[in-house]
Image (tube, rainbow, N blue to C red; front, side, top):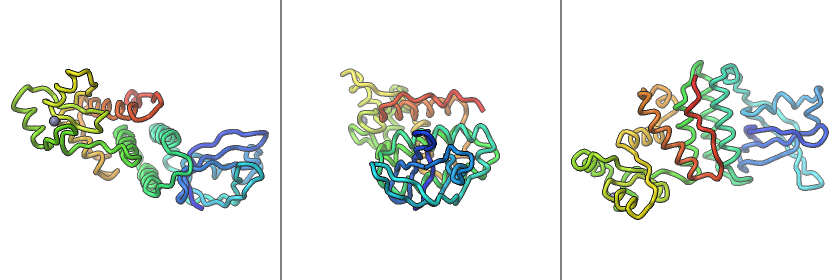
Length: 256
Ligand SMILES: [Zn+2]
C-alpha cells in the first residue's frame, strides 16, 4: 500500500502508533514495532509528511502492524525551512482532525500529495498557501462554500455586486448556517431575526473563488494587499471554526 505519514506517537515500551493517509483506505492507524530503538530501520521513513510504501500484518488484537516500510518521496526540501514546516504542521493537524478513520477519498490523497510536491519545490512560501489549503480541504470534505448566488434568494453573484454598489453600501455577507454568500437584503432580514451573518465584501468573495479554483503556483504568485488578506483570512478561519468541533489556533498571526 501507499500512504503519507500524518503523525506518530509513542505506544507501549518501544512501539509507536503511526497515522497514515493511505491511497486506498483513507486515514488509518497502524503500530510500528520497535521504532523507538535506535537500530530500527523503519524510524527515519516514518517522519510525518513522508510518502511511503508499506505492508500490513494483522495483529492478534484490534491493531495492524506496519511491515516493510519503504520511502517513496521524502520531501526533503520542505524540511529545510521553518515557515514551510509550520505550514505543513498545521496542514497535517487539520487532516488528522478532520478526516474520519477508514473513510476512503482518493481526491484528498492526491490533493495532499500535490500540495507537498509544490511546497517541496519552493525556497520561500507565503501564508496564503495555508489559507488556500484549508478552504480547499473543507471544500473536499463537503463544506464547499456556495459563492455563485445568494444562498437564500438565489440572486446571482452579479446582482449581489450591483446591489452592493447601488444601494446601501452595506457589505453582503457570508451565512455559515446557509453554506455561502448572502445578499444585502437577505442579510438584513436574517440579522433582524437574530441569525449570525459574517460581513463579506465582493473582494473577499472573489478571493475565495480564486483560492478554490486555482493551482498552488497561481495562489503562490497571487498579490493580495495585507488588509485584503486579513479580511479573507478571518472569513476562512471563522468558516473552519464553524464546521469543526475544535478550537483552532489562528494561523493568521504567524509572521514569516
Ligand atoms: Zn438574497
